[in-house]
Amino acid sequence: MCLTGWLIEQLIMLRHRNGQPVVRLYGPTSMDMRGATVQVNFFAADSHLIDSTVVERMANDVHISLRAGCHCNPGAREVALGFTRDDLIACFSDKDSMAFEQFLRGIEGKTTGALRASLGLASNFADVYAYVQFAKGFVDR
Image (cartoon, rainbow, N blue to C red; front, side, top):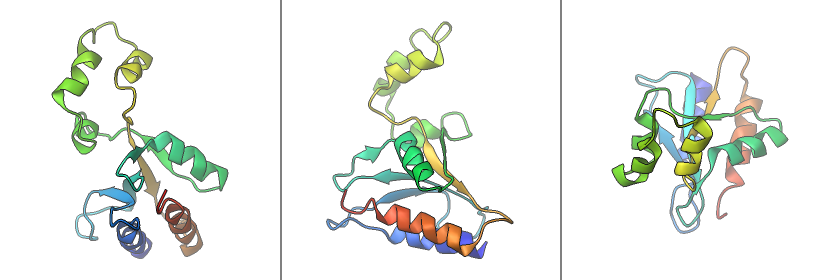
C-alpha cells in the first residue's frame, strides 16, 4: 500500500507547464477506502485526452505493464470520460445487432477506457519508479 500511495502522489503532482494535470486519477487520492489498483487517463498540455490504448502500447515498449480497457461498472466509463447523451445516441441506436467494432466506430475520437496499474506482492519500488518516469514523459506533450 506504501507503493500505491507513493505512485498516486507522484502521478497527481504531474503538471504541464500551463498548470494542466497530466493525469486524471479515478478513485480516492488517499489510501482510505482504496485498493492497490491505480487507474488513470493521460492528457496532453491542451487538455486533449490521450487514448489509453496508445499509452498502453508505449508502456509495453519500455517493459511497463499497464492494462488499458473500460471501467468495470456499466456506465462508469461514460461518466468518467464525460460522454454526453448526444455522444452515445448513435452508439445505441441499433444496439441489438451492433458489433463491438461498430460501437467503437460510433464513438470514434473518444477513448474507450483508462489505464490500470495493479500493484501487488511482486511489485517493488523500481517498478513504480519506472512508471513515474514514464508518466513524466507526457509533461508538455
